[in-house]
Each structure stands twice: as structure tokens, then as C-alpha cells.
Image (cartoon, rainbow, N blue to C red; front, side, top):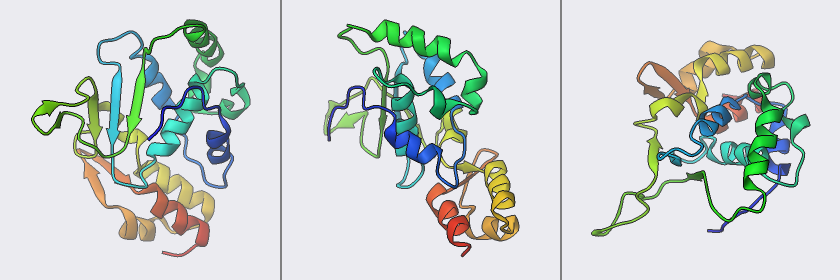
Length: 188
């Protein structure tokens, strides 16, 4: 485990310009909305391979000081908002500051209780079972998989038959790693 301050944008850039990329950039709008709010601590608990690291890398690229991420975010959904103004605003807030205004943590861990004592209980947990308003940002949605299948010339019905494993409310969630592997290798 480590603490990372301003890790840059390289890891997100690699994901962003990969052959298969699904735009989850509106998660940034959700995190921006939490700025200076009591509920600004986010914990996303999902099984392995559901896009937690990609989302964290995207947020790091967006919020990191000292790197220019305009090209990486160009053309993404979040880019249709006032991204540059937001970046300048947020970077200005963090310049020379020694406090945390937003924390984003991923993984599967007990955040509410550790033994009989409170652990890190300042986080709101967004799990696979209770994703709240972040369900569409972790895992691929049905529409996203359908579009990727069309672009990769794969039969959506077959991909759905093999990989549509989660129904959260009325949202079908696919495991991104499984779908990307199937589309990359053209093998179900």
C-alpha cells in the first residue's frame, strides 16, 4: 500500500489510447460535485478486473498537478464540459495546500469496522451490490458492450450470453477484462 501524490497521467494515457477504450470520464463530474462536501470520501469496492484502477488512473490524470492532460481528455464526454476551467480551478485550489479535499480509494476491504473499533469510517462505500449513483462507471454497461461489439465486428448476443453476469437494479454490468479479452482475441 502506498500514498501517491500527483502520480501524473501516463497510466491513463495508455488505457485511453488502447485499441478498446470505453469512456467513463463523467465519473469526474461526479467527483467534482463532491468538492468541499461532507460526503467527499469515496470507496469503490468491486471484484477484481472491474475498472477500479483505470478509474483511479483517470482521476489521477485529471487532478494531478504538474502534467498537461488536455490531449488525453480531448474528445471524451467530460471534455464537453468546462474541463480546462475546472482543471485550472482545481489546480489553483491545491497549489501549496497541505490538506485533502477529496479522497478516492478502491479495493475490497472493510472500511466500516475493524474488529470492534471503527476503521476508516469517513468513506461512503459504492459496492457492486449498492453502487448508488456510480454503477455505470465500474464495469461495462450493455450499451457500451454493444457498441464495442459493433466496432470490433463481434456478435453482441454471443458476448452477452457469455459475459453478462451482473444485474444491478435495471443495469446490466459486464466484467471489462473479460469483454476486452473476448473482443481483442475474437474468442469467447
